[in-house]
Image 1 (cartoon, each protein chain N blue to C red):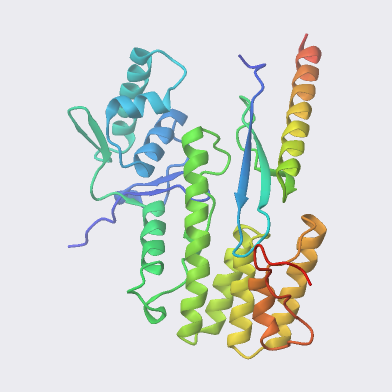
Image 2: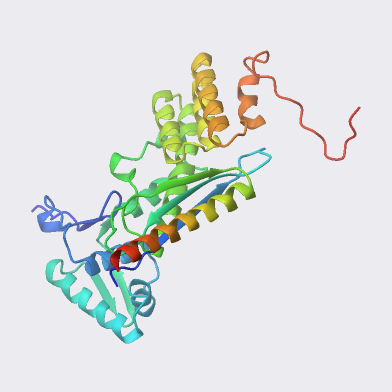
Length: 75
Length: 254
């Protein structure tokens, strides 16, 4: 189905020697059919669990909003 | 008699298949299924035909996946005969086929081998610094891309330190900055940069590198460098870079 929308979110977390908290980078990749070739893009940087969860929620909200808009405009 | 160069698969910075007898012009526009098959065989050490079919065509019934695999093999044999060895239920790249990713792994394992010293090491060539199959979004590619990124990053940091020991400071700083390039917020990579500058006796440059990283870290993550990082400079400029003593768990204040 050409109208399918899909995306991947990669959460990279690492602990530095002696750090009190982790550090992280969240990147997204549009995996929808026909979007091959798009590059990874950073959506958030994080240093706490709340940062990560907020970023995942925001990314998911944006993905669903965009997907619904594209389906509406197709119709 | 001149031997033809071996067939070569490059996956870093994009897919290409270089045939031994026509090595000047790579095949980049092979059908997508053929590219995926060659890439999968180049990256994996699991030769099981069922696993390969299931991984390459995960969303179709098993018999369809095997049909697609047979078709891809047939098409590959037409353009690049001898690239793949088929034996019973196994598929693998032929022994003589070179793969850039495997060269990257060999380089990294040498760098990370404690028996190999800096005198015998070198930066990876430009061809080994690319991203694995950019633009490909299959799950098995994403996982491999991340694994290789991590491998290269760790190896570059280790290489920087080994090159310092060998007194090759120019290459050492290049290796350290290549590690930074892989993940600009990774402190251990920035520590490698600072260590190289200090080893070369360039304290001012080490302080600049530290402060630039400290500012980026504050702006992006709102955190400070660790004591491991600050401690590098506290040794040479204790007034400017004092490290607070570590707190002992359970110790009482006052």
